[in-house]
Image (cartoon, rainbow, N blue to C red; front, side, top):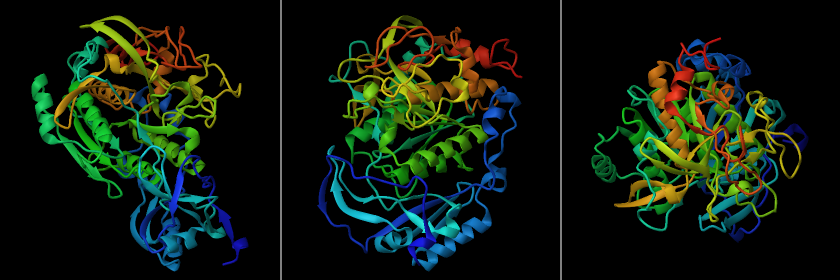
Length: 527
C-alpha cells in the first residue's frame, strides 16, 4: 500500500523520554497484543447538559443499552478486523460497548500494520524496568482514518506511578485510621455504602487476603468482599512490588474502612497506556459488577501522555458520566511542577481530565469529629498536585469559580483539583501492607477516601451521583466544604474559595449529603 493511501492516527505521536537509556533492539518476533479504539456510534455530547440536572432527575443510559446507542458500529468493527487479518494479526477480542478491538501477532506484523517506527528497548531512569519504544505517529489506511481513534500496545513504556507517600516510621504520632478521617469529615451517619460497588484501578502489586482480614478485624470491621479482575494479563501479585503493594492495600483498606458496606472490585492491568486505558474502560463498562464509583490513584504529568491517550481516557470518563459512574483520581504528590524538571508547572493526568473528580491533599489535625486545623499538604519532600491544565480548556462547571491563569502560559484551562482531603504522610493513614503496619499518605489516599464517601452518598440518595462536578461547584463556599486557605504547593497558593491546591475544599459529609438530597433547598436540588 502506498504511503499516500495511509493517514496518521490523530494524536498518536510519541517521543523518546530524556534520561532513558537504550539497552538493545526490539524482538520483531515477540508476540504482542494491541488495542484499537474505534469511534462511537453517536457522540456523548449530551452528558454535560444532562448532568447539570440533579442526579435523581438525570436521564442516563443503562449498561445494557450502551452498545446500541454509543458503542462501536458493527461495520466499523468489521472494517478494523478485516484490516487486522489482512496484516497478519489475529482478532482476539471485540467489545463493542468499550469500542475496543484487540488484536495479537508479532511485533513486526503490528509495526507494519500501523506504520510504527521502533527505536529499540530502553531502561527507565526510575528503575521501572525495560520497555520497547517507538517514535513519531502511527498510520492506518485512509478508509479507516475516521474510524480508528487510538492504537495502544506497540510502545509499552511505563505510563504512570502511584501517588503514594510513606512515612519514615511505621506509626506517625499524628496518624489516623481511615475511619477516624471519615469521622473528622463527618461522613453521613446511618450509611455504609451498602448496595454499592467501588472499583479500584491498579497497575501493579496486589493484596493479601490474610493481611486484609487482620487489618479489618483489628478495626472491628467486617472484612469487605474484594474481587480481583484481570485486564490485559494484569494479576493480583502481592510481594512482587512493595511500593505498588502499598498502593493496592491503601486503596482497599481506605474504601473498606470508610464504606464498610460496599463491595470492592480491583482491576489489575499492566503499567502502560494500553493497560491503564483498557482497565478504566473495562471498569466503566463492567456489566457484571457495575461499580457506581471508581477510584484511581495512579498518574503522570499530562504532557507525558500521547494526545490519543489523553483523548481516549477523557472519552471513557465521559462515557462513565453517561452511565452514572463517578471516577475519583489522585491529583499527584509532587506539587505544582508534578516532578517535571523543565522549570514549568504541570498538572497530573488523568486528574486533569474534565470528567475526572480530581482529589488534592491537605495536612489534617483533628480530634474525633473536631478539625483543629487543615492546611495545604506541602512538607518539603512532597506536596499536593494542582494547577491549570495546558491540555484541557476550562470546563463549564468551573466558569464561576474564579480560577487563576496558568502561571507559565498566562492562559485559562481546566483547574486541578476539584476537592481535597488528608494526604500528608505526617498525618497519614495507618495501613497494613505485606504483613506489617505503616503510615501512608499522598493523594493516593484521597481518591479512595472520596470514593468511599460517594458510595455512602449514593446509598443515601438511592441513585448514583455519577458526574459530580455540576453538583459540587454550585456549593462553592457553602458548609459542604471546609475551605482551605493556608499553604501552597509551589506556584499556587490556597485562599478563600477555589484554589489550585485544594479545590473546593475538604468535605463535610453530612452537610454535603443534605445538599445533594432531592428535598434539599441548596444548589444540589433537582431542576
